Amino acid sequence: MKTDELTNKTVLVTGAAGFIGANLCRSLLKNENCKLVVGLDSLNDYYDPKIKEYRLSLIENSTQAAGKWKFIKGNIADKSLIDGLFAEYKFDVVVNLAAQAGVRYSITAPDVYIESNVIGFYNILEACRHSYDGNAKGVEHLVYASSSSVYGGNEKIPYSTDDKTDSPLSLYAATKKSNELFAHAYAKLYNIPCTGLRFFTVYGEAGRPDMAYFGFTNKLVNGEKIKIFNYGNCKRDFTYVADVVEGITRVMKCPPERKNGVDGLPVPPCKVYNIGNNHPENLLEFVGILQEELVRAGVLPKDYDFDAHKELVPMQAGDVPVTYADVTPLERDFGFRPSTPLRDGLRKFATWYKEFYK
Image (cartoon, rainbow, N blue to C red; front, side):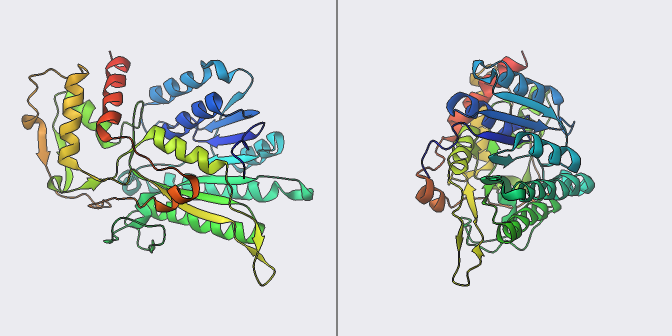
């Protein structure tokens, strides 16, 4: 497909007040000539809703939003709402980023993961399926968020999309794997072009407070100790949010091709890609860079005693020691790979944090 196919398209982004979703909406409005971007979000209180409201304000106050942005508060688990939106707006492209996130929270609050990540995603798939009713053109491409957590306890690194992913270590990971399986089935049965994206530890300004870099910062500012799991012997493929948005946007423009196999039946137009930085960072080194950037931005004083505020602890249930993305297929098919250095991304976060919490 050509590179202009978001022009005059009506796009649905679920999870539009979320970290990745809000950044994607802003980018689409600024850089792509979409006819309309519809954002859906339940604005739940899993973390501070003020950050979600702040993200929405950045979208709504942008000059590009006039007449091209519509926000709807609602839950993807509400089937009648989803069906109504698809009927009203006749979406060309759907990006499903709405999900209950977090590995650890899935251990204490499993119900919300089933509601959002399983039932909610099923509702999106059903709405895509019925968008073709009456020989309508329907949805051209469904892009959805998967996660690096589907790799579970795989010891082979870097993680490749060719690797087995049938040993999840948390309910969150299991729900994300279920999304990939559901999408494949619907692609096969109803010829819906679907692309799943396995995100790797996304970070950046106005991110999720439950993520390590943000949570550590809050704790250090409050004089509390930060817990560094597996005694610091963890590595994470930290991926800057702008790189993730660039990857999603490129994928949105290139739905998997619909074609028939030798049996005359549709070959499922369904693909999965990793979006990660392809450069895992040791947690202790990550904390060291974060400390330096927080001091540089004036979030913490130069004489802050970091050693007194660090505690090395064992691995937590559901966690893995290493995440590391093989992004060769992403680079091959879209000419792109995330590349923002960790220090650059954390510097932007620290600068934002200083301004937001002043």
